[in-house]
Image (cartoon, rainbow, N blue to C red):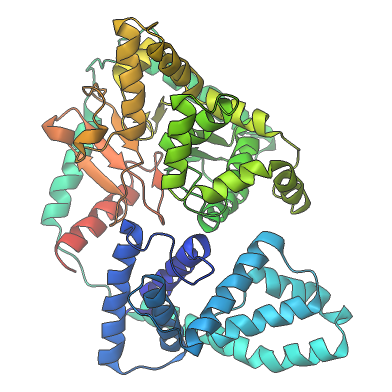
Length: 516
């Protein structure tokens, strides 16, 4: 079997455990689509391992994780010692990620937790040992030397898996269906001279978008005379992700990408909070990066919950406050609520951990959130994109291209008081549509659709179980294309739209459909 894929899936499961596992070793919501889909993948891998009869380091790691996953999803009731070992490993890993390592004994304990489950110890732990080993007390140094061969054995097992996979012959895949879809994508973006709804509006034109894009590029680029040779410069790139939902592992991956590439721009399509354990921390870190121009944040429906709750907390009898509180509690937002209640302590912790540089009050954070636009149009690599959390709405964009949560809340309050005219009521419905729309759920259809022709929409909100989902000719309209990016492991690159990256997405999707 493909051991590289097995390692990747085990890493994804580890992130699920870190973000969703309760103290009882049970997932907060075992029936979430992401967890159900992962259960199927793990069952398939387990069956392949049993058929192969292999029992190496990686297979042993998988078996412990698989047993822990069955307990976490309530498909196994008893908790053998292997599950308790895995629980100790996850608990320690969560502590290392949030607080780091302070003492040699903590480092040794963390290494032992990892080795019991055949995992490589966390890099933070190994870096601590590397930098401080000379000052370790004798017993700690001796114990580390005893553990070193076990660490190296696990390293070699992973390296061997990678080497074996790279040496395999690559079997060409069928091209007919791939080529057909790829040609549709190229045809969609090759249309010239067709005036779109947004291009015909005074507020937005292709030239304005291009100028803004060029200005942004000029700000990011250094003086040409001071530039390094081109081959040493990371290329400018603009990627889109959505629905982080407190997933600190995924957020750390994004931060690492931003550090590696000073020309990288990230747009996040909302819902950084709830479900996972680190939503408020991620949001305040996003704000700091947004202030520097590295990240754009377009709020989603979970951001609406937090915004309405905090802005209306002095009026707990209002429908806006009650609705926000009910939605938070119904979406595993108890951790978010607790962190809001202890926000001053959280800020001190984040500054001490080096995650943020400047103190910020809860009101400052929520005011910033309320001012972020819900929709954005950009031009990248010669293509027009329309970005929003759940669906892009041209009529609301033309009404106010900077429409935000603050304005939506005011329309909601005014509507209850009977102050909205028919046009404002229509905009309120469209505002809710942007945050909630899912094609297959009629309850989320708050208004008729008004999607921009000639633009490729990029949205989150609707979970995708099989990677990035690309729909050419969305809802049968040849002038519409839509990309769904609510996937816990992938991102979508606007700047690579015409390159092989999109073709890879399509090939992977087709491969799944063909059962390969």
